[in-house]
Length: 84
Image (cartoon, rainbow, N blue to C red; front, side, top):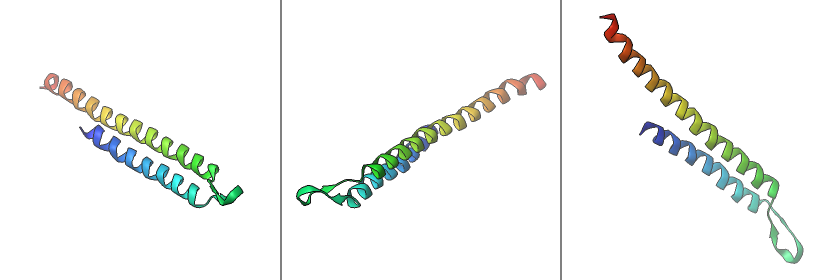
């Protein structure tokens, strides 16, 4: 449950960056032939890659955080009865 919430947060952050990059890439594009706006593919691609990296690393970090907590709880449960 907690992993899912953290993953959703990282997905939202990454998606905002990707969507912002797409928007800014189209807004900052130049006018080409016949007055049609050509998107700035450099901005779009860069924002897409950064957003994807944030989503990937954020969900992996959330997974490691949750796995560490679960492992610590299991070790504590198994060590505690043998000490008594």
